[in-house]
Every structure is written in structure tokens, then in C-alpha cells.
Image 1 (tube, helix red, strand yellow):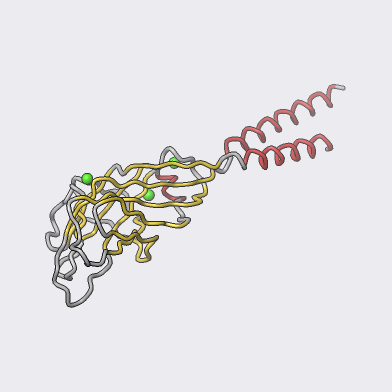
Image 2 (image 1 turned 180 degrees about the horizontal axis):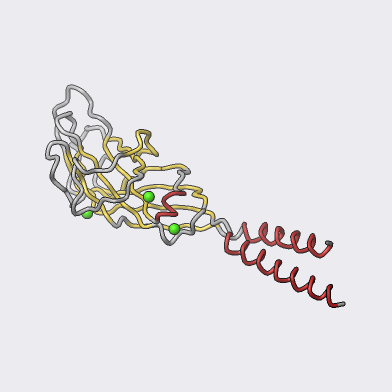
Length: 216
Ligand SMILES: [Ca+2]
Ligand SMILES: [Ca+2]
Ligand SMILES: [Ca+2]
């Protein structure tokens, strides 16, 4: 019994030590990105069009997808941010920039060559975070500490981006597109493989001890 306690103590001690050494950071690039609009509900805009119209004439949603297979299942996300690089447009001097929101999407069965307004997956109504754009260049949205546990398991994270609803009374229409979407994550891997290995070796040791005990 003393040996069993010792084994368990050693296992938990080892778990505690190894748990501190599993913090990591990674930047992932989108595997898919495309825009859809209610104005052309059967069309796909695979160039990553990001319309920033100020009128409510049409709505534009952007979808991006990331491969999370390189991050161990069960990892805790310590911080997350999404960056887009906007090209092809600029605001006229004095124009205010625009805030864009990031929404979580649980459905992953879409791709950039076929997604349309009519076939788009549903998004969470609550925004994970928002960014601010005011010129060509990188714009970043801080996503806090999101729960991507289901996406670590299915290896795919889908997100929807949209510009905040337009101000009323302004008829300016501006549009641009982004050519890079990247997701930066800090995460802590839960040391499941180590725990299983240590527990396994502990059990083997215990069985060995019992056999030895029976023999003597
Ligand atoms: Ca694309
Ligand atoms: Ca997913
Ligand atoms: Ca996984």
C-alpha cells in the first residue's frame, strides 16, 4: 500500500511539473476565405471581398477557416487574435474607419469555392471580438480567451467577419478585400499523453511489485 501511495504521489508530482512546460504560441493562415452577400445570394466571392458599404442596401459576410490539427486536443486557449490584411481601398481623408466583428461558426462543411449567401453556415450572434480598419494594411481583432475545444477535436475552426451595421443617412459606398487572414493563438497543452504514460508505467510497476510479493 505504501508503494501504491508513492506511485500516485510521484505521478501527480510529475504531472504538476510537466504541466508548466506546455505553453506555446502559433500563427495559422486561413485555408479558406470567401465573401457572400444577400444582394447576389447564389454567388461566391472567393477573392475574400470585404465590402464596407455604408448603406444598408446589401449585407456582406466573410468566412474564414483554419486548420487546428497542430494544436493538441484539450489545450486551453490563453489568448487569440485574428488579423486581416486589407488591400484595394482607402478612406477619403476625414472619413472615420470601420469596426468589424468576428463571430464563431460551428458548422465547418463549407469551402471557399462554393459558399453562397443561401448556403452559408449559421454564426453565433455574439461577437468574439472586434477590430478597427481605417486604411490599407493589417487590422487585428482581439478574441480574448475563446472556447475552441470542439474545434480542437474536429480540427477545423470557422469564423465569420462582418463590418458593423452602417450609419444612417450616409450613402457613401466603399469596398475592398483582404488577401491574408491569420489567427494567432497562445495555448497551454494539457499533458494527457504524459499522464497516461506515467499512470501506465505506475500500473506496470504495481503489477510487478504484487507478483514479487506473492512469490516471496
Ligand atoms: Ca479565398
Ligand atoms: Ca469546428
Ligand atoms: Ca485535434
